[in-house]
Length: 139
Image 1 (cartoon, one colour):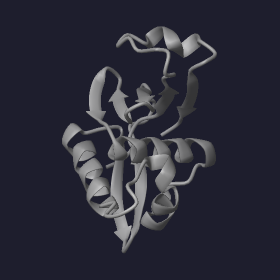
Image 2 (cartoon, rainbow, N blue to C red):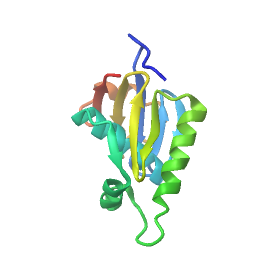
Image 3 (cartoon, rainbow, N blue to C red):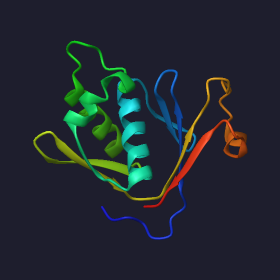
């Protein structure tokens, strides 16, 4: 799939309390898979990297809330990959080799981490508030 030129950015909202991820107003996933999505999208936004490994995700286990034993990381990543494909999401995950994958952006992302204090479903006003972490990611 190729990126759509000049496409409007997708608003990605991440709720760290339970790892929930919303794309625009649509629920995508939560839990460990949601935390994986957020880590990869954020890392791509900050550094421009698109290649990742399962090993680096395992090393970030505490950040992703992986259990000590039987983390099933490969299964969680596969679930996330399938969910993104089913939804035709702006970010897709492609396996590139053993324990390696890449992120492909079809549209730009606008990332927003929703603070614990904002519990209402309507958080569009958070875009301009200082306590929300917002980052634009070009496709």
